[in-house]
Image 1 (tube, rainbow, N blue to C red):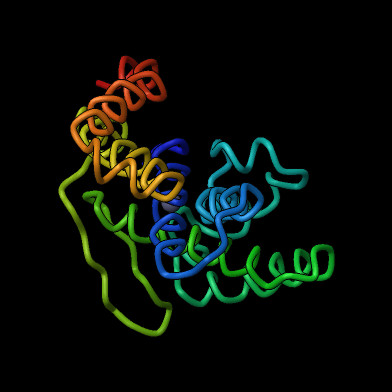
Image 2 (image 1 turned 45 degrees about the horizontal axis):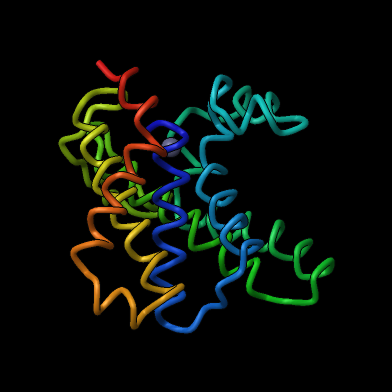
Length: 188
Ligand SMILES: [Zn+2]
């Protein structure tokens, strides 16, 4: 999946956690997006590898969609990044958000035809039907972005959303295409 699809997945997964009591904070949403980008640190041309200092190191040692695309890596890298975040913010939520984002990446990649192996210690290798960079991914991106916007509006204004659901869905649809319209045009 492309990097922005992963960002939207990460935000959606975190907003679902907000429904279950996680704090609604921009920093934690940002950490979820960061976690959602992190697994692709194993690819030299990924967004995160080109943006993060030292991002070109990892691809020399591991194959793409290999070790970083596992539960073990999610735990290890969350311990590292989340530990630093805890040290700075004195809150464990950035680490939780990062982990949620990381898992959302594994979930999203599972929807693709090549799928991923979720653990180094198991042969479990689920695959989906989506080809990266195609209209199939575009459809997933539209649905996930739409759900994210609806959820965001609901969390911000639960009562108004319930009373004006039709309007909320219409606004969310327009917002969805305003956010990802340009990205959709690039798909094959
Ligand atoms: Zn990936």
